[in-house]
Amino acid sequence: MSLANFRPRFPAEWEPQAAVWFSWPNNPETWPGRLARIQQVFAELITRITAHQEVRLNCTTPFQGEATKLLRAAGAAMERVRFYDIPTNDVWCRDHGPTFVKDRDTGKLAIIDWEYNAWGGKYPPWIFDDAVPARVGEVLNLPRYRAPLICEGGALETNGDDLLLTTESVLLNPNRNPKLSQSEITVLLKEFLGSREVVWLGSGMVTDDTDGHIDTLARFWKTDGVVCVMEKNSHDADYRTLMANRERLQGLRTPTGGRFDLVELPQPEPVIAQGTRTERLPATYANFLILNGCIIVPTYSQPKRDAQALGIIGELFSKHQVIGVDSLEILREGGSFHCLSQQQPVG
Image (spheres, rainbow, N blue to C red):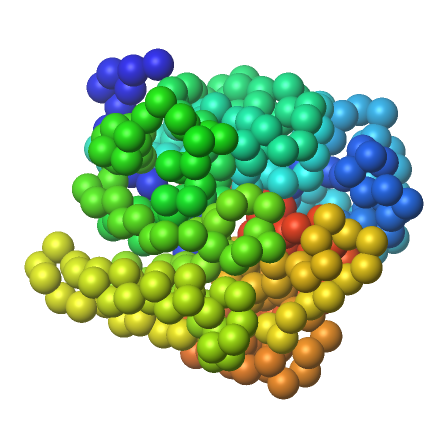
């Protein structure tokens, strides 16, 4: 769908938010033997967020009663929770949810609706997930623009000043867009997000089911600052990849030619789990969630590394309250807090 007269700008995550969206877990096949525990984890996470802002939940009517019960038991501010009767296949709202943009002239909101195929067709079915942006557009009465590109929200990172980060291993992957070249994808990203420049990193962690989402690797912390994950152990399987990504980030420049503030974020020690799709899980501190006045950082029961990461992120976002929250239960299915959420900016 053509954007016609709409001139998009992709806001940075730290800009004021009207709400943050989640998709309530209700599929026992996604969480075999662990659905009840995951619903509890969600309720506890959402409770923390309602202390700061509104939470909007994709949750079909049959599951809303149990979700409400769990949220109340966790102490959520229920006046800041809104349910929407929108079905989903899985919980990763960052990827199947809408990408919100604002018109750079009027500030009005719109939705970019990417084509979605569950990270290259890995986890069918995804028919409900692919329809989520359209349904959100309907309930919010927002214009929606369907982009001819298979993409997930976790593949996109913006500084709010028209600079976009993404990775070759995701958007150039034959399991996503086999008929599109890098230059063609760049044109589409610029058109639908209003980006002036798209910077491509290489790939991500070898255990990452998404093929290397940017939100596990590098995040903007201000318009001219980026934090990137680094592995100090040269024998680690991710060492060379992360070093190569850092080298590309060193080339970032502002519109006036200035250098970016590049800050390194340590990787956790390897997180090993039995009975999961991969023995080593894709743990990263970069998957933090920025909210109004608060940042939720995944932790991994590693006191020294966790504290180091929280300290770095706290220094970068000095005006925010930085909260570390254990992410091991969610990580067993391959993601963390940023992957679960999708912010809706104030429009």
